[in-house]
Structures are given as structure tokens and as C-alpha cells.
Length: 422
Ligand code: DOR
Image 1 (cartoon, protein in one colour):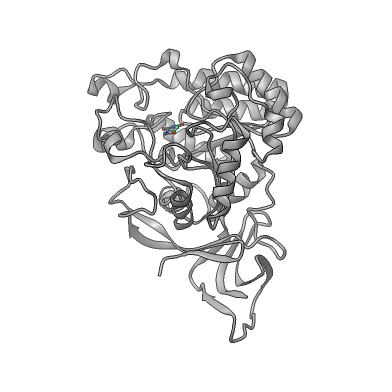
Image 2 (cartoon, helix red, strand yellow):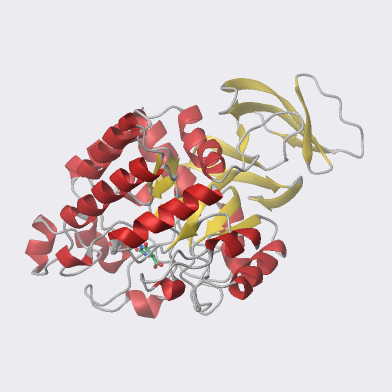
């Protein structure tokens, strides 16, 4: 048995925030109480001064496996997740080949079972992620796909997007959408605005995102599907999601740590390490994202962990691929840029990183109570640390060298310690 003693137990489901002990046996939480009595053969973790929370759940990771394993593979991706406090991840479908067939899906799920964490996978919405023909969603759901997404590629055909939503509603699975219309994009990954003008490049305007978010909010309303808007970056998109939710659309909105931490000026400092799709936008957009996090317009924080090699990221700004890694800095960016400045409470942060992601996929996770799976993160909310090295195969992060609050001490998944910082 594992006895976690005197930790500050945070459970977003019951809104618990009290110091007590938590006892684990055979992969489950068996008790939450004060004054527990371990025997000599039990493992005791002294969690005094530390937070004990549900294992974090990231609904948006790219583990690049199969096909692009020079960037990451399922094993190294899982190590990065564990180091970041994550016990469950949902892999995106833009592997090589994409996850539009049962064999690739089964490969990912079977490799995932060899890691210490829960590796789930979405499947593509369209065959080859080409945006013209729907995959067999029913079959892929039966084979274990938890949802569907062409993440990385927007679905431009509105009638196809509607058919996908009709099918998702019938099957009761969420659809996740990457919202950027290339019709308005001159160069992806950099906001069209003062920074792109300064750099003499065309960039990607918020309009590209806003038109697609507007379309999909209305399609969601009319179809009743659960539509997950990924990596929201523009203030007007946040406002649109707020309106659509008020109208009754079943929208679930996600933001990345980089979009709530940085604005477009980061590109001047970090170059290609601040290039991602959708791009970092203006300070006003970031402020509306903070507002959206506070009023629960934005439900989920997810990393869009997107590893790329040093060679790829050393290409010129307009040629380098978009995306940054995020699993190992996500909680600390939330602590540093949301909780410490007072934008969110610790309980709200944990809710958006565990309970709400679990709810999107109807997972019986993201909470701490007797009988629940022993998926747990233990961290020091006030310890400052410097971002230096990564368990990920890649290190494309603009946060290298940053001093951040919030240090992971232990990650426990299915009752086993899969990471500790000692
Ligand atoms: O910047 C991004 N990179 N955004 C995405 O949506 C996809 C990702 C990737 O796969 O590299």
C-alpha cells in the first residue's frame, strides 16, 4: 500500500481542498482520512506542504508514432507526460500513416499499454486527413478510438463537417476541430499584425480562426454534437464560444499554456520556437482568453504537445514546422501565469487539467475519492524551478531558461509511482 500523508488534497469534483492522508492499494484509492496508520511494509510519502491532485489529463498530444519517431515516440512521449504530472493522454491522428484505419489505431493503443500511463487515441475524421471522405467512425469507435479529429488540418467542407457531427452525435463521441481557414493565411504560425509586419511576412489573421469557430459553433448547435474547439487563440473566438454555449451548443473549448502565457511578440524573442498553429496573438486576445478561463467559457487546458527536431526548427521562420512541446511545462505555466497572479484558483486550474478533460471523453477519472483509480500527481505549488531539460525526444520550447512555480514531485498511475523528482 502507498500512504500519502498530510498532503493538501484537491478534488475538483467534490470541491475538496483539505489536508489529510490518501491511501492506495491495488491501483485504487482506498481511503482519504486523517491519522492513517501505515505498517512497516507500506510505502509512505510525506506530502506535507505539497498538493495531491488527480493525475493530469491531456486531451491533445502528438506522439508522432508511427512514422515520425525521430521527433517523439509513444514511450518518450509517455515519459514526458509522467514528468509533467500527466497520467492520461489522448493522441492526435496526424501520424504517418494517419489514424484513419483500425491497424494504426491498434498499434498506438498496444504501444501505449507498454507505458506507465493511460495512452488513448483519437482517430481521424476524414480518410487520409484529406477533408473529403469520412472515415468509418462506428468501426473505429468500436476498435477503441475515443474521439475524432483531423487536428493540424481544418475541415473546410461545411457539409462534410456537418455530416461528421451528425455521425458523432449518433455515436455519442466528441469531435475535435482545428479551426483555421487557409483562405486567409499567407504564412501560418505567426499572427498577422504588428509582429508579422515588422518581420515583413504575411502571417495568419485571427479572421482565419474566427470564421471557422463561428461556423462550427452553429453546426454544433444544430446537430447537438459535442464539439471540442482545440487551441483557441483569438478573443473573438472566445466570445463566440460563450455565445454558442449560452444558446445551448455542446461546445467544449480548449486553450494551450502557450496561448494563455505568451503573445505574438514572443516570436521576436524566440523565433521558430514561438511558431505554432494557431499562432500566438495579441495581448488583448490573451486577456480575453484569461476572461474565458475565469468564466468557464474555456473548459480545458491542453498542451498540443508538438515535438519537432532541432534541424526542422532551425529552418527560416516561414519554413519551419509549427508547434512546440508542452507536457513538461504545462502545470507550471498554469501555476505561474494563472494561479499565482490570481486569475484562477488552484482548484479551478486542476479542474481544467483533470476533471473537465475526463468529462469530455466520459472517463471515470479526474477526481479523488475512495474507489477511484489511483491516478495522482503530487507537486509543490510554490517551488520555483528553471526549465532546462526534457524527457521528450524533442526540446522545441520557448520556455527553456524560464523560472516557473510548481514542481512535480511524484506522478502515480494505476497505483504505481511512474515518476519522482528525487
Ligand atoms: O502548431 C501545431 N502543430 N498545431 C497543430 O495543430 C498541429 C501541430 C503538429 O502536429 O505539429
